[in-house]
Image (cartoon, rainbow, N blue to C red):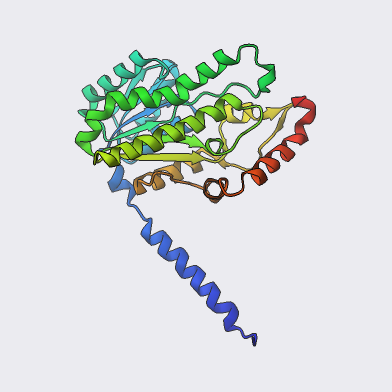
Length: 299
């Protein structure tokens, strides 16, 4: 085949056109989409949840924000109220059924209903080899209460309101919902369970023709204070590639309205989500090989 300049130019043009088409298909006017949306947001006292609350309030959403630490929640509320007065605080431990029931009732009282339920609260113990757990059952139970049961309880209590509004449930997850991660057995297991639960729930909604959208969003590594601390071994960060919390929130905001079952905000998360089931041994080998860099800490 004779080489010409067009053999280079045409693929580049096709690639650029594809990028433009994809962006056009996925374009959402976020200001009009989120304005006056009634949203419950858990885990809003710090990190991604705090930045998400601020950004949503800037877009005119009406919020009920929840976390266990009321003083931190009120700090988030003050920052949000620079943009919107419709931001209400509910102190809640989302691992407890009665707290979730209270959270939903307070949201309905303040907002008049629920359009979007964002399950952002998450708990991950410090990195520990499973064989070093003193009480693995208690550790797993504590993680599951927050990472899985909040979705069970809040869905249960919000269901009628979400039916009425044709609402959306966003389960904030991570790439560990696909992969196994050494030293994070309880957290990884809970995220796998989260994917299974909401995947099943989505099918049930379809079977009963419920007009409720389920979105699972597996995030990449995000530089929050807690995440960085958890991922340090002997003062060295195990996973350096990542995105900032502000960048993460902006991508989440723009991706959620697409209402796909699995929404990915970065290409690495997209590829892992699609390719892991095809070549799990390669991913597991790569993760294990990478972790050997920290073998002194994990022996």
